[in-house]
Image (cartoon, rainbow, N blue to C red; front, side, top):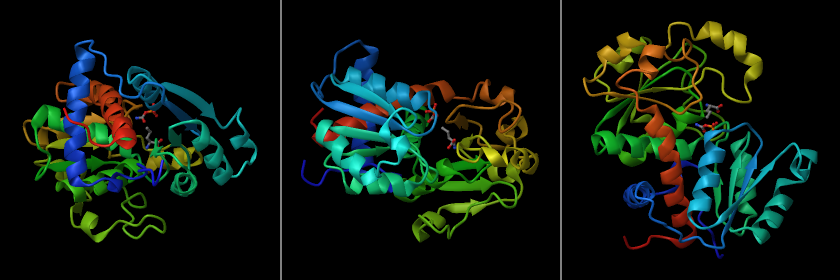
Length: 311
Ligand code: CP
Ligand code: NVA
């Protein structure tokens, strides 16, 4: 495949391409719900490389590729040569001669970038330390399903400025919504982070607040994530202490817009980053959000392999 399209960051696609993908995701989801076959990827193979744990990402990519008519192969670091020091560039050459598409969940974003640079086939970022674009694709799609266009709306993020938050910032710049952030000192947004710094267009959509209730005031979507992301486990105790006061709770939901929804990429820790009454409450859309990983990633895989298709 000459010059394959990759999906390594949310900023890899344009606003117009997202408009197509969200429409396509709705069409693919509708067919799934009606038990109608949708198999544009018969005989195509997806390789999924996992260097970190996963439930949803593996399930959604594997089930999704199967439903599209193709096959998926699961590879992890533990029992492949990737865990024994084979250069990522060599792995990319080999993988991309045998499969049509690769999804990688790993540590540094540089690993997916280096893999993609040596791959003949599209590469999808299934989470790195820096970004989690597939989750934001699902989250924005979920917002649109519930409330319509996200442009002009406000997303409030309470907690750790992690891979999810930086992906929300990329989405805000492309899809034109605001992000309100509130987290403890030392865990805030690093506008000039050494790798993949926040662009001025992203920073223009961001407002930071000391008080999480203030960050949530009037917001249309309230969201958070674990306080300790994968790869940062050694900091767990320090983080547990630092993040006290930054649990999304009923006070924050009450300050939000009356029709605000709550999202969490999962897995969640009730009583840490989110109060049980919020994640299990009436404004929570977390199960639809999780399911939508399946539908948006089917649309994404189809798009990367076949381009835009007529409805
Ligand atoms: N949200 C998400 O990516 O979940 P997994 O870690 O289970 O894949
Ligand atoms: N920020 C979390 C997301 C898990 C899906 C992590 O990177 O571990």
